[in-house]
Image 1 (cartoon, rainbow over the protein chains, first blue to last red):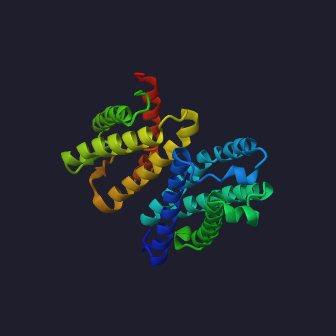
Image 2 (cartoon, chains in turn red, cyan; image 1 turned 45 degrees about the vertical axis):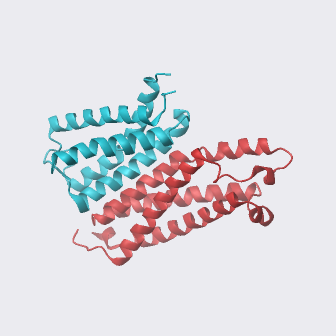
Image 3 (cartoon, one colour; image 1 turned 90 degrees about the vertical axis):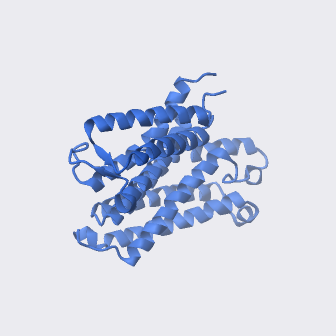
Length: 155
Length: 134
């Protein structure tokens, strides 16, 4: 455990911390406001109530799993600061879980036509979803590559 | 309607914080650098942040089964940041030699306690519903 924290580690840790804080902010906004939710009247004008029930049922199942990602990622940041090899363990667990949930979310959106260009252009909630999906996949891939190649893995 | 009001949660959280500190001081789990840090920990971290803001404001009127995962997530993330700041920057309290849940290294103790902070807003939300005055 004699490794020093590199600039790359600090940037990676900061990116993960921002991701964790954004995840917390998203769920606070989800429960306290409507800004994260898509306009269901655009998605299904004939029966917006039916789609709202499906969408809310789907989204409401995420917080426990997102909490797992937030806590494991925060532990990875913590142990990265401590220069402890457990950073690699929690980093890989959190990144894998992040990719898994991002892919579930993306495929739900694709199957239900939420990512059709006509809907995307008209709905800020869907645009936010897409940005979150892209960030989640990118951060998961970068984190897995960095943690797997990290000197702490061989410490 | 005081069942989920931030003030109700704040009061319960202060009592919970005081009880935790009393319990930990009996077991000599950690030592504060000053009495002010101890009081600030109970009032600000336990009372205002975990109780008033997370359990009270975010917990709000949502059913516990819906909101509990979010309360745990917020409590644990804030707790890990708090414990990390103390461990690596502030050093407001130090861990004793006594093992905590089988752990002996201070960074491991701080990490576990950071995650356990997640239980604070969940416990406060449960107690605030049990002791609802409405």
